[in-house]
Image (cartoon, rainbow, N blue to C red; front, side, top):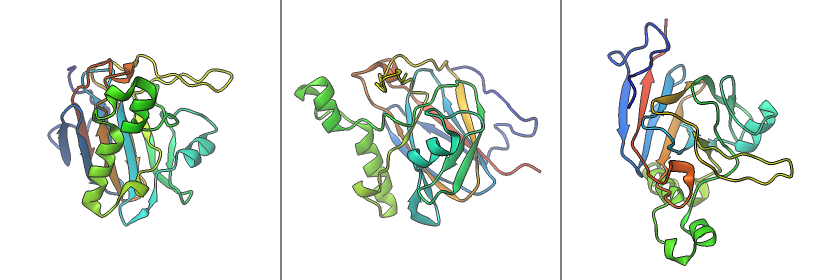
Length: 216
Protein backbone atom coordinates (compact mmCIF):
# COMPACT_ATOMS: atom_id res chain seq x y z
CA UNK A 1 0.00 0.00 0.00
CA UNK A 2 1.27 3.46 -0.79
CA UNK A 3 1.62 6.11 1.88
CA UNK A 4 -1.40 8.20 2.78
CA UNK A 5 -1.81 11.04 0.26
CA UNK A 6 -2.73 14.32 1.91
CA UNK A 7 -4.76 16.79 -0.17
CA UNK A 8 -5.21 19.55 2.42
CA UNK A 9 -2.75 20.73 5.03
CA UNK A 10 -5.42 20.59 7.74
CA UNK A 11 -6.62 17.10 6.76
CA UNK A 12 -4.51 14.33 8.30
CA UNK A 13 -4.92 10.81 9.62
CA UNK A 14 -4.75 12.18 13.13
CA UNK A 15 -7.74 14.52 12.74
CA UNK A 16 -9.95 12.19 10.70
CA UNK A 17 -13.41 11.85 12.23
CA UNK A 18 -13.66 8.28 10.91
CA UNK A 19 -11.04 5.78 9.68
CA UNK A 20 -12.29 2.38 8.48
CA UNK A 21 -10.51 -0.68 7.09
CA UNK A 22 -12.86 -2.80 4.96
CA UNK A 23 -11.65 -6.38 4.34
CA UNK A 24 -11.71 -7.93 0.89
CA UNK A 25 -15.16 -9.02 -0.31
CA UNK A 26 -17.05 -7.45 2.63
CA UNK A 27 -19.88 -4.89 2.91
CA UNK A 28 -19.65 -1.65 4.88
CA UNK A 29 -21.76 1.38 5.75
CA UNK A 30 -21.39 4.63 7.66
CA UNK A 31 -23.06 8.03 8.09
CA UNK A 32 -21.44 11.00 6.39
CA UNK A 33 -22.89 14.28 7.61
CA UNK A 34 -23.48 17.39 5.50
CA UNK A 35 -20.22 19.28 5.09
CA UNK A 36 -18.01 16.28 5.81
CA UNK A 37 -15.58 14.91 3.23
CA UNK A 38 -15.30 11.18 2.65
CA UNK A 39 -12.29 9.54 1.04
CA UNK A 40 -12.63 6.09 -0.55
CA UNK A 41 -9.19 4.58 -1.11
CA UNK A 42 -8.28 1.69 -3.37
CA UNK A 43 -5.49 0.59 -1.07
CA UNK A 44 -3.88 -2.10 -3.23
CA UNK A 45 -5.04 -1.07 -6.70
CA UNK A 46 -7.39 -2.57 -9.30
CA UNK A 47 -10.23 -3.06 -6.81
CA UNK A 48 -13.80 -2.22 -7.79
CA UNK A 49 -15.69 -0.54 -4.95
CA UNK A 50 -19.45 -0.79 -5.50
CA UNK A 51 -21.08 2.17 -3.76
CA UNK A 52 -24.56 3.46 -2.95
CA UNK A 53 -25.72 6.64 -1.22
CA UNK A 54 -29.00 7.23 0.62
CA UNK A 55 -30.42 10.38 2.17
CA UNK A 56 -29.73 9.57 5.82
CA UNK A 57 -32.92 11.39 6.86
CA UNK A 58 -35.14 9.66 4.28
CA UNK A 59 -33.89 6.40 2.78
CA UNK A 60 -36.49 6.57 -0.01
CA UNK A 61 -34.24 9.21 -1.60
CA UNK A 62 -31.13 7.51 -2.92
CA UNK A 63 -28.40 7.70 -5.54
CA UNK A 64 -29.58 7.88 -9.14
CA UNK A 65 -27.18 6.93 -11.90
CA UNK A 66 -29.58 8.33 -14.52
CA UNK A 67 -29.84 11.73 -12.84
CA UNK A 68 -26.08 11.81 -12.27
CA UNK A 69 -25.18 11.05 -15.88
CA UNK A 70 -27.82 13.49 -17.13
CA UNK A 71 -26.55 16.29 -14.87
CA UNK A 72 -22.95 15.89 -16.12
CA UNK A 73 -23.91 14.86 -19.67
CA UNK A 74 -21.25 12.18 -19.27
CA UNK A 75 -21.13 8.41 -18.81
CA UNK A 76 -18.33 8.52 -16.24
CA UNK A 77 -17.83 10.45 -13.02
CA UNK A 78 -14.74 12.29 -11.80
CA UNK A 79 -13.63 15.51 -10.13
CA UNK A 80 -16.44 18.05 -10.28
CA UNK A 81 -19.21 15.47 -10.68
CA UNK A 82 -22.40 16.13 -8.77
CA UNK A 83 -23.72 12.89 -7.25
CA UNK A 84 -27.47 13.24 -7.81
CA UNK A 85 -30.41 11.68 -5.96
CA UNK A 86 -33.61 10.10 -7.22
CA UNK A 87 -35.29 13.42 -6.34
CA UNK A 88 -32.91 15.41 -8.54
CA UNK A 89 -30.97 16.89 -5.62
CA UNK A 90 -27.20 17.02 -5.13
CA UNK A 91 -26.11 14.46 -2.54
CA UNK A 92 -22.34 14.92 -2.77
CA UNK A 93 -19.75 16.60 -4.98
CA UNK A 94 -16.60 14.81 -6.04
CA UNK A 95 -13.72 17.08 -5.06
CA UNK A 96 -10.72 14.85 -5.83
CA UNK A 97 -9.95 11.86 -8.04
CA UNK A 98 -6.46 10.38 -8.46
CA UNK A 99 -7.58 7.61 -10.83
CA UNK A 100 -9.89 9.11 -13.44
CA UNK A 101 -12.09 6.14 -14.36
CA UNK A 102 -15.27 5.24 -12.47
CA UNK A 103 -18.31 3.44 -13.88
CA UNK A 104 -21.95 4.06 -13.03
CA UNK A 105 -23.66 2.04 -15.77
CA UNK A 106 -22.59 -1.60 -15.36
CA UNK A 107 -24.31 -2.18 -12.01
CA UNK A 108 -23.49 -4.72 -9.31
CA UNK A 109 -22.60 -8.36 -9.78
CA UNK A 110 -25.18 -10.86 -8.53
CA UNK A 111 -25.55 -14.62 -8.30
CA UNK A 112 -27.91 -14.44 -11.27
CA UNK A 113 -25.57 -12.38 -13.44
CA UNK A 114 -22.64 -14.61 -12.46
CA UNK A 115 -24.62 -17.60 -13.72
CA UNK A 116 -25.44 -15.94 -17.03
CA UNK A 117 -21.93 -14.64 -17.64
CA UNK A 118 -19.75 -17.37 -16.20
CA UNK A 119 -21.80 -20.58 -15.96
CA UNK A 120 -23.88 -22.40 -13.36
CA UNK A 121 -20.80 -23.37 -11.37
CA UNK A 122 -20.42 -19.74 -10.27
CA UNK A 123 -24.03 -19.21 -9.14
CA UNK A 124 -23.34 -19.43 -5.43
CA UNK A 125 -20.17 -17.37 -5.37
CA UNK A 126 -20.51 -14.25 -3.25
CA UNK A 127 -21.71 -11.15 -5.11
CA UNK A 128 -22.09 -7.41 -4.55
CA UNK A 129 -25.87 -7.51 -4.63
CA UNK A 130 -25.84 -9.96 -1.71
CA UNK A 131 -23.49 -7.62 0.16
CA UNK A 132 -25.78 -4.65 -0.48
CA UNK A 133 -28.91 -6.53 0.62
CA UNK A 134 -27.23 -7.67 3.83
CA UNK A 135 -25.95 -4.19 4.63
CA UNK A 136 -29.11 -2.17 3.90
CA UNK A 137 -31.12 -4.67 6.00
CA UNK A 138 -29.41 -3.11 9.03
CA UNK A 139 -31.40 0.04 8.24
CA UNK A 140 -34.74 -1.62 7.60
CA UNK A 141 -34.36 -1.74 3.82
CA UNK A 142 -34.57 -4.69 1.43
CA UNK A 143 -33.84 -5.84 -2.13
CA UNK A 144 -36.11 -3.22 -3.68
CA UNK A 145 -34.02 -0.49 -2.07
CA UNK A 146 -30.79 -1.54 -3.82
CA UNK A 147 -30.57 0.86 -6.75
CA UNK A 148 -28.07 0.89 -9.64
CA UNK A 149 -24.75 1.89 -8.09
CA UNK A 150 -21.42 3.59 -8.68
CA UNK A 151 -18.45 1.31 -9.35
CA UNK A 152 -15.50 3.35 -8.16
CA UNK A 153 -12.23 2.30 -9.86
CA UNK A 154 -13.97 -0.10 -12.27
CA UNK A 155 -12.90 0.31 -15.89
CA UNK A 156 -15.83 -0.14 -18.30
CA UNK A 157 -15.08 1.25 -21.77
CA UNK A 158 -18.14 2.07 -23.87
CA UNK A 159 -17.77 1.52 -27.59
CA UNK A 160 -19.40 3.80 -30.21
CA UNK A 161 -22.20 1.26 -30.68
CA UNK A 162 -23.01 1.33 -26.95
CA UNK A 163 -21.46 -2.00 -25.98
CA UNK A 164 -19.77 -2.14 -22.57
CA UNK A 165 -16.94 -4.42 -21.48
CA UNK A 166 -15.36 -4.79 -18.04
CA UNK A 167 -11.59 -4.73 -18.51
CA UNK A 168 -8.48 -4.44 -16.34
CA UNK A 169 -8.67 -1.61 -13.85
CA UNK A 170 -6.27 1.32 -14.14
CA UNK A 171 -6.18 2.28 -10.45
CA UNK A 172 -2.84 2.08 -8.65
CA UNK A 173 -2.30 1.26 -4.97
CA UNK A 174 -3.44 4.22 -2.89
CA UNK A 175 -5.63 5.81 -5.56
CA UNK A 176 -8.65 7.55 -4.08
CA UNK A 177 -11.71 9.67 -4.60
CA UNK A 178 -12.98 12.35 -2.24
CA UNK A 179 -16.57 13.56 -2.02
CA UNK A 180 -18.07 16.37 0.04
CA UNK A 181 -21.55 15.68 1.38
CA UNK A 182 -24.25 18.21 0.48
CA UNK A 183 -26.76 16.45 2.75
CA UNK A 184 -26.57 13.82 5.48
CA UNK A 185 -25.88 10.61 3.57
CA UNK A 186 -25.71 6.93 4.38
CA UNK A 187 -22.74 5.48 2.50
CA UNK A 188 -23.09 1.77 1.65
CA UNK A 189 -20.21 -0.16 0.07
CA UNK A 190 -19.69 -3.63 -1.28
CA UNK A 191 -15.95 -4.24 -1.55
CA UNK A 192 -16.48 -6.27 -4.70
CA UNK A 193 -15.81 -10.02 -4.32
CA UNK A 194 -15.92 -10.79 -8.06
CA UNK A 195 -13.21 -13.22 -9.21
CA UNK A 196 -14.55 -14.16 -12.67
CA UNK A 197 -13.78 -10.91 -14.49
CA UNK A 198 -10.84 -8.47 -14.28
CA UNK A 199 -12.63 -5.71 -12.32
CA UNK A 200 -10.58 -6.71 -9.23
CA UNK A 201 -7.56 -8.07 -11.04
CA UNK A 202 -9.04 -11.50 -10.16
CA UNK A 203 -7.82 -10.90 -6.59
CA UNK A 204 -10.17 -8.94 -4.26
CA UNK A 205 -8.28 -6.77 -1.75
CA UNK A 206 -9.01 -4.56 1.30
CA UNK A 207 -9.91 -0.88 1.01
CA UNK A 208 -10.01 2.13 3.33
CA UNK A 209 -12.63 4.80 4.05
CA UNK A 210 -11.87 8.03 5.90
CA UNK A 211 -14.15 10.92 6.85
CA UNK A 212 -13.16 14.45 7.88
CA UNK A 213 -15.28 17.19 9.39
CA UNK A 214 -15.89 20.38 7.45
CA UNK A 215 -12.79 22.55 7.31
CA UNK A 216 -12.73 26.05 8.67
